[in-house]
Image (cartoon, rainbow, N blue to C red; front, top):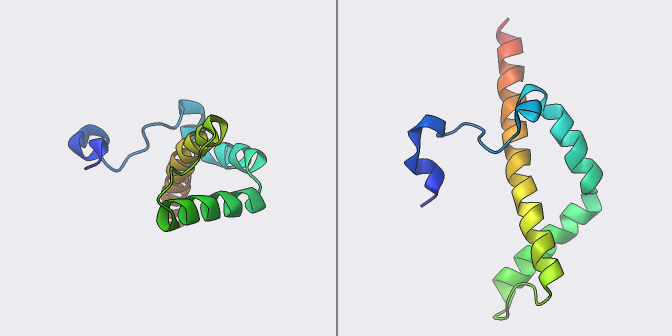
Length: 96
């Protein structure tokens, strides 16, 4: 079970996004897509899925690749939070 579910004070709320990015989540999206091109994202997803789902070997045999994957997944979590805020902000604007 996710440890986030054990903490009701931030359940279903962005917790890792910095205050700067909470105020302007689009700036995180800009940064994210400067760091990762769509082709890179597609390749990472393919590597993760194929390696983890089709082989019995460790996902990545080089520490650098594992570090890249861990950083990518942390950034994906931030991307989810920024997208969540953009959606909430958009819904609030539509209600005005």
